[in-house]
Figure 1 (tube, rainbow, N blue to C red):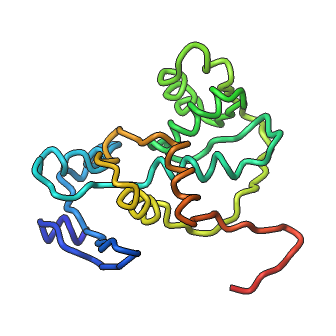
Figure 2: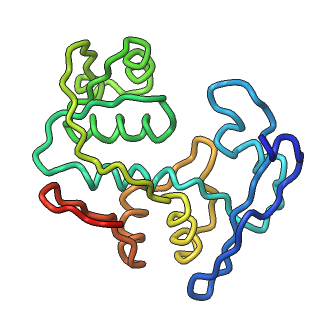
Length: 193
């Protein structure tokens, strides 16, 4: 809301990582309505075609993190919540890998089915009676920040915003190469933070 009222971009924080100088910017919204406000940053890139920086929203790393956190042998995943580009990418990739994606609401099911190809849609299921097991830890991870660091460290020359996503496996491998690993929580241990 502050960026919408302020009306222009400003730097929120600055960091150094190796030889990189990183900044987090607050970017004004060009619309306050609709399902994809600002088209995930694409409107800003379109309005500023001569940007000297790359906009990276971290979606591909968020997808990679979830995909690589799913226990081996999992055959079914319940997908709930708002359907964002991350949710669509997760559903698409899971269905392609032969993992059944269960939705609990018909509108979500229809949107996903429309988006999937014929080969993958057989793994999409609508269920009203589904027991959910949450195996992902409830911690906040700044995938967007790590993605920006990896993006710059690798010298990738494209934006990751709008409906564009980088190759999930490529981003995952690059993040591991740069020393970024997900936190692992074991259910039998208690940790103090």
